[in-house]
Length: 155
Image: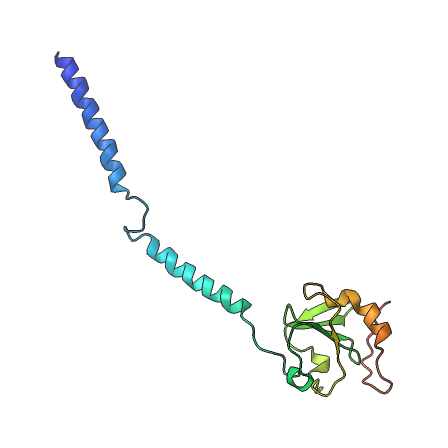
């Protein structure tokens, strides 16, 4: 009888310890304050992520051409594309196509508002414009007397 009481008492004590241990850890619903720091950093990250995808506005030459950023643009006299999806310029550099969010240095001093452009309306916006270079170069060659940039692009 004494041993039965000891066993029952010991089992109650052990079960009480396990139950109290569960209450001491909280229920994970954020009321214990451990989530505050995580949520603070999460908010900062989401803000930066949204800022990165926010539209920066049209390029400086767009109003002169009535461009609305719905298609890619090809500058035939300079062999440069404006990629509307990535909001940057694609150009030939050291044997490869390069991308730059800002205007490439070799056309930085050129007024692209007066430059000849070709809106690439037949190419989907999610396609890379440099893939279609051969077709556009053949259909829209550079003008005679236009800027000689000494760019060698293989066909």
